[in-house]
Image 1 (cartoon, rainbow, N blue to C red):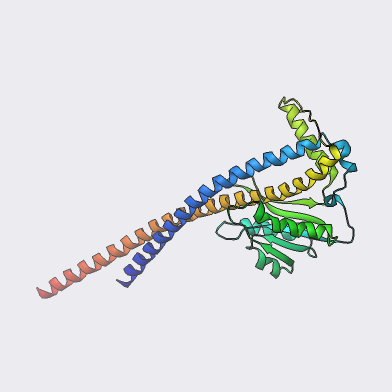
Image 2: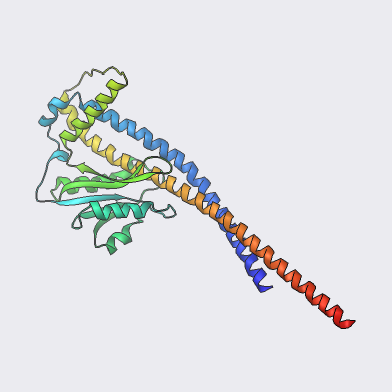
Length: 292
């Protein structure tokens, strides 16, 4: 009887767990659709900013923006965009593996999402600051992060700023990616603008001629900081879409595994119950024969 009670207790426990994982799967699915939509829309916005650079390429070398200046004596700053919560499969562990390979050990680190803070400390990485963002964030919540990065770079403390994050490919695939944010490289901007121009030509789109006021240099001085801000924002959006996708898939897998386990435990329970009934019948039969 005790064995039957144990099996029944396990079935109840697994069934309760499956209900929790199913609910988490549904919540993650709803959040994933929203995060995916924002990430894809953000890509269009960043591309639109980059497309303007092809009309300003002759003036890129004439601008005087602090975010383009280099300082050979500064350190490297790595921005790690992870998650604040777990239950998202191997998303964070894959990001950590890429980080340990691609990011220098003597760099300073800041995290957006606290899940990797402990692992970074164990690996001997210098964590300077950690920021947390909810599922929904705005420009105001990103401002402290932007100010920290900009202040460190402009002061000369850092000569290079890179970000490592999970790029959203699709629901099943998220790929760790590292991108340099600062200093802004004119050659990279021109390459991005050229790629967009080639894509427009392949699609048969007609180039747009802009009337620039007050002038290309003044426009670039305003546009380049905006480009930096939106690049980091886009990386955070990619990370959020990747997180919710990975969590939805992980919870779906957990729910399916729970259903399989319930089936196995139910079969085990039925076999144990059948054995118990058989033994009881044998005992009754034996007792009746003994009474004859």
